[in-house]
Image 1: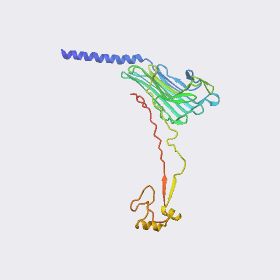
Image 2: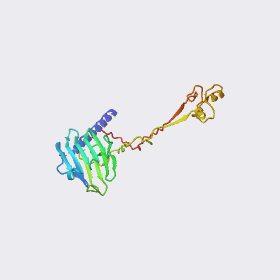
Image 3: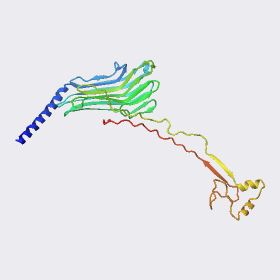
Length: 327
């Protein structure tokens, strides 16, 4: 009897789990995917005419491409070259999957204040086996901000831009319950203008470069992935304190100097020293056979003064770590 009851309980649990999994797959019903190369505004919106794709709710595959887009008069504010965006996915047997990408050959904002080449962002979301999860990544061949290198920024790395505003590199936002829903938004960079007027750009204007997002069943992401530290690249790691040559100080032989003044002869000095050679006053060095001795000739001691200065390496302020793994 006891064995029969245990078997019945196990069967009920297995049935409940199977129902939950099938119910989760049924609850999805749709998928979400979106990708674009450039967005501007307050708030930002994809630029008209620039590549933009959105995944139909039932899934599929969409691709768009453009040779480039100039922003502002003659590209003074910014320019983008070679944009390609994609999104694809759909429902599967026990869940759903979506993957979106955005690629840019070259991006420049505010006369090269921010410049990046071969930019690629990827966002993917999956529901499978009763678990929902998302992942994202950003890659640059090169990325400079205000002349400094930031080629491999951690997620949500913020860099201040004096006189303009700030820029967030490798921006990542996530959402979902991890069981039936998951979504992510990945942006190569987002520049926010906080000054009143910058090249006729009004305060509050936002520039989003290379955006890819995915979600099951839809895109709903607002939680910031663990913020990365701002990389510090010193402009001059070592600072010289002087351009002068090392100082040479010559100390004449005491016997020669006194002899030249007519006080006594070097021979007298040697005789009075009972045959020992006289020592110079160079730092008090007077050991037997030492380099500080004079043998009656016109010798001298050269003292070289060298100053060595080192600059301590700047340290970073520790930042909270996250359990999420960055691709």
